[in-house]
Every structure is written in C-alpha cells, then in structure tokens.
Length: 423
Image (tube, rainbow, N blue to C red; front, side, top):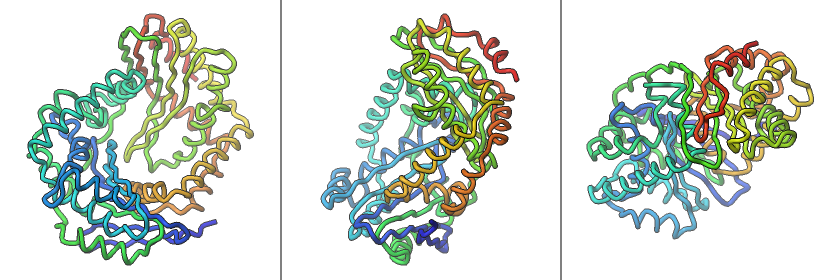
C-alpha cells in the first residue's frame, strides 16, 4: 500500500523541501508552512500572526493586490492561506505547468510585501469585521471561550483572530518585526505534491529562498499549563451552546491514535454514541460532536452540544453518563467502525493534491519527517479496548473545562458535573 514517491531536501540555510510526486494527475499543490502562529504572539499583539497572513496578499514591491489575484486566477489557479495556534500556511493549487508561477508569487508575498499604510488600514477593518462576525456567532465564540478557560492568561488560550483592542493597535513595524523574529528558514517548509519533480521544486526553493539568512534561534514556546474551570455567558439566544472538555494529549503522545478512535466512536458521526443517545433516542440536541486538538506539548478534548433552553438540564448529565460508561464499556464493533471511518477519511484525503500537500507540510513541522502511510494505519489498527479505557480514565482525571453561551440558568452546576464524572 505504501507507494508514495516522497523526497526531502534541506537547503543550506535550513529550509526544508518535501515533495510527493503523483504523475497521474494534471495538477499540483505547493505551499510554504511556517512554524509560527498565535502561540508566538506577545500579549499586547494578539492576532498579529493572522493579520500578517491577511496583509501578505495586499501588495508587494512588484505586484499590487489586484496583480496577485489576477496572475494566479488567470491560469486557473487558487491561492490562499490560514493561521492556527502553532503554524501559518500560504499555498496554491495550480495546473502542473504553472508551479514556477505559484512559487514566484508565494515567495513574493512572503519576502516583498510592502504593508502599505493605506492597505493596512483597509485590512484592519476587514479583520475587525471578522472578529465582530465571530462574536455574533455563538457556536464559534464558545470554542474561543473554551480555549481561554482551559489555558487562562497564556498565549495558547488567546483567540487566533486577536481582539478588537489588540488588532486596532497593530502597526507596520509590528508586522515586519514578527517576520524578522519568526519567519526563519529553519521554521519554514516548502511542501509540494502533484505532477512534479523533486529536483525542480528544490531548484525553485533555492532560487526564491536560498539567500534567506538562517536567523537567530527562536525562543522556546511558553509551556502549556492546562487549568480548566467554568465560564458561562448569558445571552438572549434561541439555543444554548455548551462545550465540556478535558486536558487532552500532545501530537507526540503514544495515545494520539487512541484519541482519534475514541473521539470518533463517542461523537464523530451519526453512528456515534452521543449522536445516537442524545439526538436519535432522546431528541435533546440539534448538533453534538466531539473534537480534539493536539499541540506540541499538550492538547484538548471536548464535546460540543447545541440545544434549546428547555433541554439544557438533561444535556450535561447524559454526556457525563456516556463518558463514564465508555470508560469501561466499549465494544469491539464500535472500535472497528471508528477505525474504518478514520482510515477511510485518511485514504480519501490522499486523492487530493492539496490535502497531501498540507499533510506533508504539517508533518514536517510537527514531527520533522513525513509519517509513512503504513505506520499510520498500523497505529490505528493497534488501538484496542484496553487503550480506549485507559485513555478515557486519563481524560477524566483532569479538571473539566465547561463553557456555555445562552440561557444558562438551568445548566448543571459545575461541581455536580465533576461529581458525575468521578470514576
């Protein structure tokens, strides 16, 4: 099954180039993954990594914002970017013959952005509207509150978008300073997949980035310090949005794949325990799902539920009961189904050059290597009942994090939740 043509080269300045050749397609995806995100921001500059990602498309010394959009779209390509807590990505999907153009544009926006004051002012308004839109979307903001409550007064707990106050203060010097401090070749990966040759991508990477200085060593991340707790925000809404979670695991934890299997069987789809019990059997919720986030040194696991105020009193007791039950009672059939779902999703993603490109970029940042497909599938297959039981017991030993928005007057008391989760 392992037939991927993956190659890695490290340039003299420390920038890594990884490619996955798929000669049977006519397209390619290429991008720059940077190991810097919201977690690298100073307290007064929250949101700068995301703002920088926006500003990269607003003009360079040789291209206007319109030129950037026109050049890539004139050849049928697509250019985009995203920011997370630990990384930022800039990427393009194009026909195979336009890879050199994509690399030229990507290097231009990363190395030659002008951050003109006029564009800075306009894009600040756009980002502030994005923050406002999130504030008006309770099923989005409840996750920011969850992160903040889990990691209070820490970089890891701040919202990726920043706040109205912090974004309003950001200046051109802040952006250029963040680049100087964090956009070093050693923290950058050129990832490319599709109908291409590794040596060609290496030549393009050397041409566009080979002269970048290695830069000073980047300070270590502020260690994650999970706290947990209870935060409820009263709002006049049609629904109540609730997130209950726990300290999870890091991306390097041996239980990483056990977490994936557990999350899927508990709340990963229509056949999951929570969906069947809470929506199909009881009709308590419209939406319910579990999720996990793994960082370099820590992680989170959580369950989201959205329901009408009249069903609020029942929601948390049922979730707690399911968590306690699965800590000792899980069937081989449930585990097999969850494994099949995870493996299918993973293999289906490999049919997309953009998914392959992102997967390789992130794996190089997090693990320093591409993770072989055979290794991934073997680790999924190795998950059994004992591993699930041990993982759930480990989760429930941590202090719960509970956040809710809406009419929370009848939501279960935090201390009662803790008692119901005791094993």
